Image 1 (cartoon, one colour):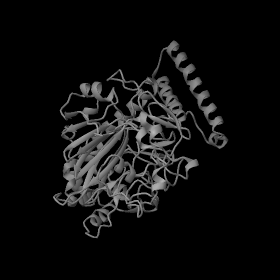
Image 2: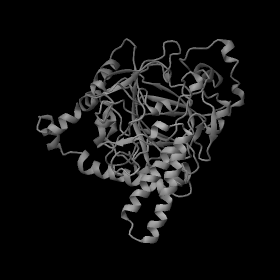
Image 3: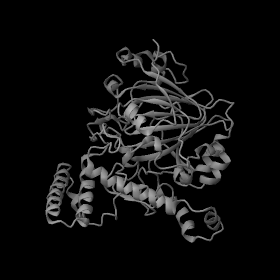
Image 4: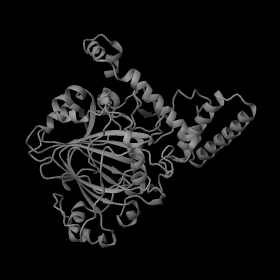
Length: 473
């Protein structure tokens, strides 16, 4: 059987055309060229010396390869280390190479991933390490993605001569994946194939925009759960009330606010969260402790760099915990049970994955699945992947690669559910109007504060700015 192929477009495509043809139709597409925005300088990162000098001081969590399966994306415990130490490890020839992937949370005792510096466990953030140290090398909102709202960016770095697999899984956000070095082969299945792909989680719904929701963590089509959505609604209405003068309009907003507060109380009761009422202040300042990105938790705190830190979840981080089915031994809901070796064999693809025994293989009826797309991506190309498209990624770094690594940078965006409107791709106008205003505030702050001049960076490096030094601790 011959695998299907995707459209290929140029990165200069008009954002409205891109939205109409691919975002609106929830269709993956290969994009020739990287982000065209003037501030996109990520290609510099393939120089590992530059990368280490710019971001080597931050702590990251890296993933060892599974010793039995010979793949990543497993339950192998991550290791925390300096980014510079990780990069130096990739230069070794012994083959024991680790993988920098999505950054969740970490022990903040050494100032690692706890970006608010309060000593509590961090959450997934909008700009996790090492991206937080690379902020002046990429734009927060690429023009090609139009009015989608950013959820997170990530840098992916590893080394594999023969290819290492991510395992078959899906994500919960729209993905703009930019390949900087190495080679990537994607095996893609649409969200509708989920029942045939043996996910670890129990599916609650597949929304019209393709987003998959699981029983243990039900989410709306825009990726927000009910509680965080209603809390953002409260914040939005409070903000509107503070600036509204007309009595009739104020009365209408007060009624909506009362309904939203009642809805939040009902949700708290349903969750059995009597303790959640303790210390809850629904009238707190709207700019005080709510993160604009709506990142997986309503108790998030917005940081100066636009990151979002949760005050509720500790340890693994809610962003990872939300994807783990408690009835399935903590395995991520969005990962397939199908062994990578079996998938590759079924599709007659080259593989380095360890073969499973025949008894294990017979548990999976792969002929029921549709023929996937198989996509090859080279440096200088991008892949747009709508939320919940299943993908298995084999990454390799051939010897001809100057740095001997494979490297990618990606943007994740909240999945749009208002697919007929380029200007407003999210249906909940109250919530997303509020979140977008927070996002715009962060972007404005970045333009005026987050990108210091070269002379200021020199003063900081020379010890002239105590504030900058403190922020690096």
